[in-house]
Image: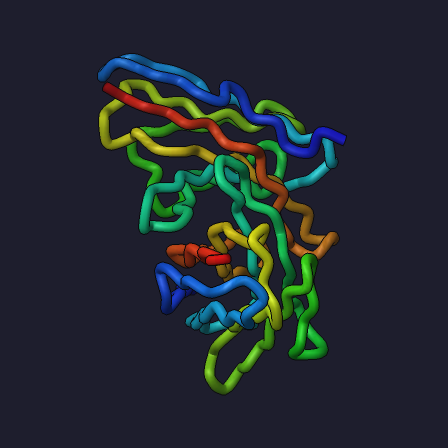
Length: 111
Length: 113
């Protein structure tokens, strides 16, 4: 079985500060890892994904994530956040078909 | 390009009423999914369809039924709505050959009173 734990339910940061959203996963098979963003009253949008190859993955809006197999982690980072990054972020793990999502991390940007 | 279209966007039901949530995708994806989103619980899979003609239960299927009408359409039915089914429902589709990422609809906000 696969599972995902997002270690922080809420992360407040100041504008232009760096941010890291933490995600740990559990899987007995090869994994594919994803980060999705949900802006208020919208559906989920794919930020980035790791399928294979380089462990550092770059996504949209300046986000990147690093796959760490030994620590079973896939943390999301951005060096300088914007007010527009205020949203909920979901980490997900999957195999050939279904994705399992974490509980979400609400990122709040303070001016 | 519409992507994944869900209808309706909002719905209020009385306990015991039935309704069907509609979902259609125009990306020629093989796989489609229904999730529910509740505060603090992330997204939980209700049912999925790996390909046209097949459906399988997910994590929380009780109280729901699905129909994969054709490759484009995947509907979710609540036969007798209960207050515990108050939630936001998302439909998604994916195509393994395109890297397994899901494309989500904009959601249906359902309230059962």
